[in-house]
Length: 350
Image (cartoon, rainbow, N blue to C red):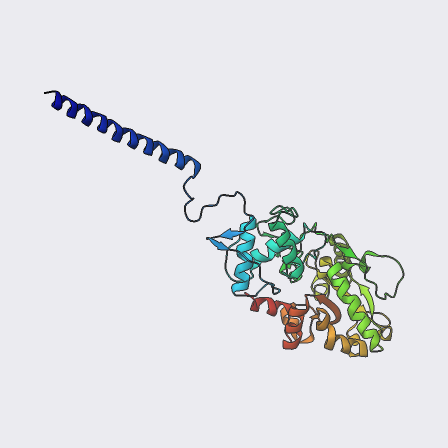
């Protein structure tokens, strides 16, 4: 009897020891879990913000080559992906479309050291990387708000991005009435007058290019003069009204633009001339050595003859060998080599 009681007591003690060990093991496991939390699920991040610039679980990189309106391919899609992560409401279309031009222009307008062109280049790339790292600040739409398409009383479409260097300004596409370029400067070139008039001005990117072009002409023994650059909306009102009074509206509209429809308001244009034609703006200028040189070499500096003799039906303006427009070297080279108008070039990018 005594033996049976001892066996039962021993069994009870052993059961208690086993249960105690199990409790201790569970407590140890719970403590371990508190010290080493579970790893986050795939795609989660243990850091806030977007400093790593990742999307769709892939690292977003910026392309190294220059890009502009009409370009296509993987490099454009990389740029668009980067801009999306920065907060721009655009899509990855792989085409450098209007929205991409707008996003780049908006960013450029917020950085004093960048030209406002809508073109992605090394300077823009450097600033975008700085924005990624938090080294500079910007705000989506602070430089150039997205606006709905509007029209003038005549039905011309008013551009929402008057800053891009490929902006189309003609009888069907107008600049905003209140648009005044913020980067107007006076290029260091010759003028046949000494007064510091507004018409001496151009946007900086165009002014830099025309200085280079005039210097090249000088080396060839040619003497170009600037005659008329920037012209405000209000000034164009007065000029067009005077031409209508003199020759009638229909005739005036073959050589003079309605307010808002003048390229001069863009700040990307300069009428040029020489002494041989008395510093006038006349078709005869195209037959002078300076006029011929301009036709052959303007594209090397980013300029085109905006109203070619063979494209009157498209531009709807008479031939003007003196009217040069800055569009950048890439576009200018293609336009001048193909002998097409700016309208035709832009249609080809759609």
